[in-house]
Amino acid sequence: MMTLRIKNSLSAVGLTVLLALVGCSNPSVNQSDEGTNTNTQTANSDPSKLVVALLPDESASTVIQNNKKLEAYLESQLNKEVELFVSTDYSSMIEAASKGRLDLAYFGPLSYVLAKTKSNVEAFAAMNKNGSTTYKAVVIGNKEAGVDSFEDIANKTMAYGDQASTSSHLIPKSMLVEKGLKAEENYEEVFLGAHDAVAVAVEKGNAQAGGLSQPIFESLIEKGIIDPDKVVVIAESKPFPQYPWTMRSDLDPELKTKISQAFTELKDPEVLKPFKAQGFDPIEDQDYDVVRELGTMLDLDFAQLSK
Image (cartoon, rainbow, N blue to C red):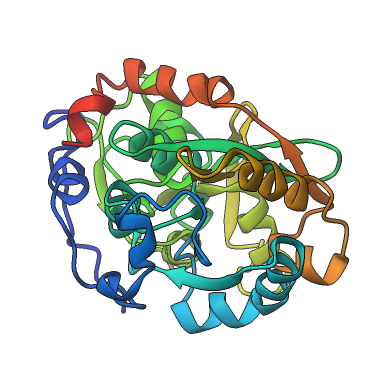
């Protein structure tokens, strides 16, 4: 049985745990944090090798294997060696970016906002899926427990993913706040690290409710991993900007242009398959102000969180 006794109060502590995670170096990185591109540490604006970080949504080996075609595509378009990199978690990825060890990085919206406060990075492209560069989160409930409304979550256990996740933490938590439900005051919160873990916990009744990305939830249903007869979608969020691709701001201007073009001109379905996208569209930092606004709602200080 999945263990859910992992209590981390966010409303009262102001994300103190994430403060520590983002502010402290985490040497436990799947592809060794120390082994990434040392050229970036000397502010090389045109390195011979580009370190490209991908989100740790699955095991490092799986993510890297799934994106071998992306690696080959970027090498052919940029005429440079490309090293794919996957950290153990979001905070490790943010830390690697802050030390200049990543040339390109695919962040979640919140992890990008946090990385931006302490790193010289800029967003330049976001996934286009079904003609949109936005996506939604969902709050789900366990049918057997009778949790099919926000009111039913009161005095129950609510599961979230990674603390630096937008759609599996920040967005669903804000949805509960809007309904007058605060973590550890009105319900118990637990963090399970991943979207799929949240859905499985709710399906099995180990948590009575949970929050995760709508596309991931729908994918889990389609794959038969989650039984739709055991879970109910309580609500879906408003649209939020998709996960951004970022690059070091101090890269050579000509190289930055080539990188942007490589992504916005990418149409190969095999390369795009792991992202379940039709392509990538240009995006800017200001598009993520809506994420920063959630911080205001939850009384979070993003600058402080990154220290």
